[in-house]
Length: 68
Image (tube, rainbow, N blue to C red; front, side, top):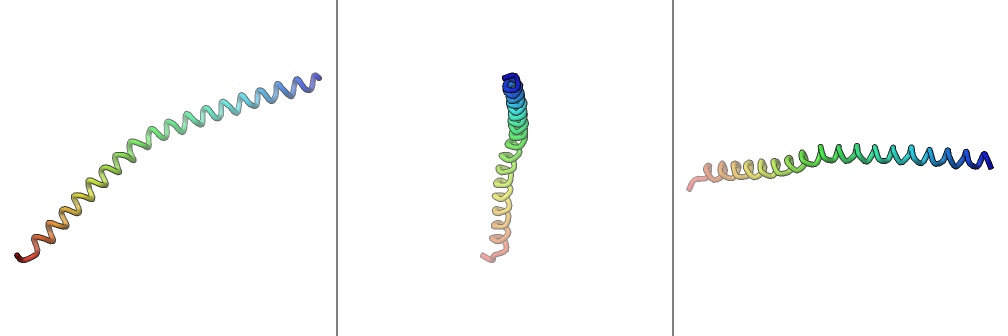
């Protein structure tokens, strides 16, 4: 019976350690996501904006070189 109590106490302590590990991991992942998401959104908008300008510039070059 005494060994059973020690086993239960050890299992509870291990579960608590694992729960703390998972909580810390979730916190770390959340903080990483917050750092990454704004950069990705801004890059996506910037890349679309840059692509639009490049396309417009190429089109204007093409049109300006054609003889009307």
